[in-house]
Image (cartoon, rainbow, N blue to C red; front, side):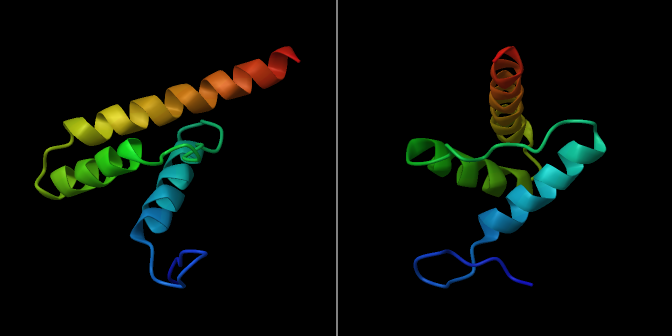
Length: 82
């Protein structure tokens, strides 16, 4: 099943990548990862990291996932305090 954007109905590879990342995070004992605010420049960096990973340069993707995991855990901690 191909992921599609809401607006255009076109295939959106980022949805598939994010879905796989959420599953891997769950397997590692993390809560579902929040990719919600990857927009604008962050989205450009995200796609650049994916392209770099295809060339076996994983450092940019490590940074992206470190940020996503940190944001997800921070949001979860704030919810627990309420």
